[in-house]
Image (cartoon, rainbow, N blue to C red; front, side):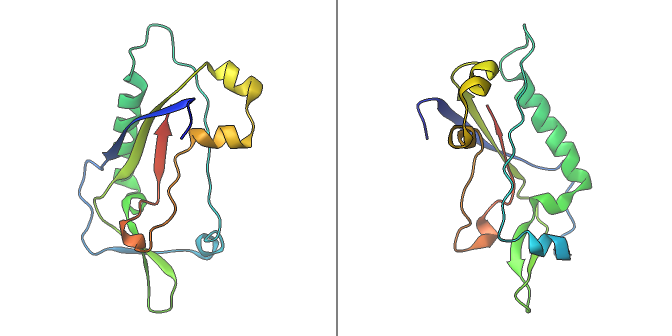
Amino acid sequence: MSDQITILCKRTVVSTKPVQPGKLHHLSALDRVMEPNRIRMVYYYKTLPGRAVGAITTKLRESISEMLNGFPMVTGRLLKNDEGQWMIKFNDAGVRLVEARAKGSVEGWLRCTDREKELLLVHWEDMYHKPYFWSTFYVQVN
């Protein structure tokens, strides 16, 4: 990756409620227009002084788990229907959470960052030849 970012671990965050087996979510017209695109976001935050290392990650995992109860399609996997359009098959596979450490401070990153450097803060994996085994969402905490 980079000498400035160190991946500590990859985890799976799952819903606290099981999903309905076999349920499918058909993508909207807007979803289909977005197919050739990808969204990568970076949210910068400061850790409060005195906060234990990993406290934010623990709280984030709990929050994501609760969110997945209301939005189970986020943990689903992509399949194509008979017309060749993508749809999501619900499952309990969860969302991938990547924990990493970045050297320096938020201020330091913001002073000297560019697009290439900033993308180091966002985990990305290209879709496998078998999209059913590819996670559609990743969250990286640095």
